[in-house]
Image (spheres, rainbow, N blue to C red):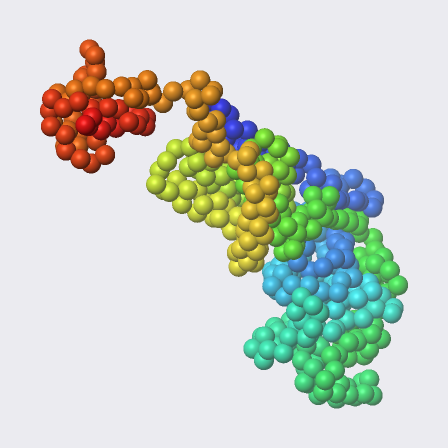
Length: 458
């Protein structure tokens, strides 16, 4: 029992310790992305916060921008400059970022550096003004699937068109142009550009075109030029960059990476549990789940309650193996484990899909590993592998082979079982089925284990 307890502790405590260490170092990693141009921050006063958005629009970006806007608000900044260069990303994350911009007490200027397409366009439209770098573009906001193909779903298109139109109207921009950036079926005359947006096309605007149709207010070579145009060139500039932890988290919350972590986590811990002694699979499993919670914690989705639920679930599943509870502990543990994973995820639906896929893949991996190393399985602890044969000195019971061929007298009727006497010994015997009266002479014709078979001597 002591060994079993140590095995449980050997898996649970490293998981708890590793997750705790990751959360502790988060404080140092998450504040490493600030750079200041000018005086010390304590003496700055109103400042301009420059925040780069040069990645895929996803949940990790939203978490980073929440931190940036929070720091800007605490510093009572005068303006936030979002430097956009993105091909877009998740619609849901873009909506949340747009809401963050709208609700902020600090006005935002979007500086398009390169491209602000798809979800990036929506983010820009929520800003109070848009400044574009020469040669940059904005638009192409059609909804696409994971493969990059257009989604031909009227409900989805209608929703995104309405969302884009509302964002355009916030600051007096033409909502029809926003709709043309989304819906390839929209036909739109553009007199300012001496052209028309034809059916089947997705509208994209260059910097010059965006200015002509009122989608951008100014064209600037650099961010500094944009700040000068805003009349804020005398202000201190504070650049907020994603920290190392936030960059890692942005990668870890990706659904594909999340699924891989689940596969490694489930398979690793299961292999260590059912085929103990390797060590490496258990470490890989624990590290995988630790990275999952670390990434989602940094991204702002997971709290300590998610980690606790997960660890309790793992503990109960281990205890179920050694303390029979008719499956009660196993069910509670499974529910707790799944609850920990789902509460830490940005999208419970995506997490469930990843879990199902990971469970199927991990089951296949576990099957082949157990099949190959079946002699090392934990069930072998409960199976007596050594054969207790006579040649190894084991006797299951006293043998009676020495009686074979001896004769005796039946002292009770044999029907077919009874008792005979050979010499001074009374022996329980059985016939082959026939009846033998008491007093008859019988002979031992067979011994098998504790059975002694006799026959009447005629």
